[in-house]
Image (cartoon, rainbow, N blue to C red):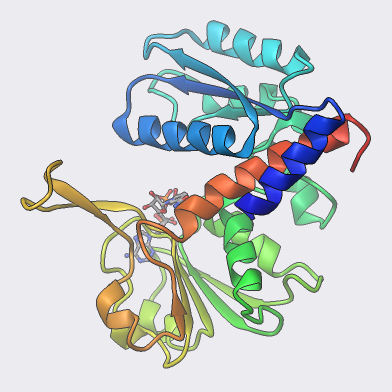
Length: 281
Ligand code: NAP
């Protein structure tokens, strides 16, 4: 998909169009910094212009809102990314509502969430959309599959469940959403043709919880201590990868898999937005 997008961006450049992404990072959270760096690097590799804004942790709500409004008005910016979570004291909901829905390439504006839910064209949130693309492009049949999602966040579990139950040929799944109040998690995951783990806890999904031949998507990103690593930790998913890979027909690794797909879908939405702004989509 990255190669497809790169070619598409090159084609747009020949028409004088350069897709642009406005990036806003507030504060110094190390994980957010590394996500934003990866997104900016991906833009550069794809030929997308990125307008990078690093704001101090003490930035006021007013200053943040006025930067978003400035980007809403700028023709060279087709997408706006405000890296979440924002530092304490800033009102995330208000910031997301300020983003022009036509530039909401993260797909978090209630307008886009609502459109997605009723099956209208909208910017789809990047992580769930990336997961669906991963499945489709790996030849996994979603239609009619029993899918169990572990996690019900607004950025992964809830939108993903919604997208998978849509009545269209990229979805049509039967979906169960599990969370911390689910009585017997393994009872559900064992029935699943596709298990999607987005709990944010290492080893939430073990081999005994998986049906032979199931497809396993690991969304989780967790730090576990590892003295052998320079940083003192390593990243793992929510799935016991080594044991589950013996039973699953397909499984995504962490790092890798869902993370790079999330970034790819951000690029995809930015290119889509640039095409729409120029009446090419
Ligand atoms: P979140 O807001 O951290 O919420 C976690 C969800 O998992 C909640 O719904 C929680 O249930 C449920 N949960 C937690 N432990 C559970 C357990 N033991 N059994 C069943 N359900 C459990 O979720 P998120 O923001 O979607 O993040 C989830 C993970 O995905 C994190 O590790 C995050 O870093 C990662 N992530 C990765 C990407 C990527 O691009 N790779 C993108 C987004 C997130 P309750 O609702 O009952 O509390």
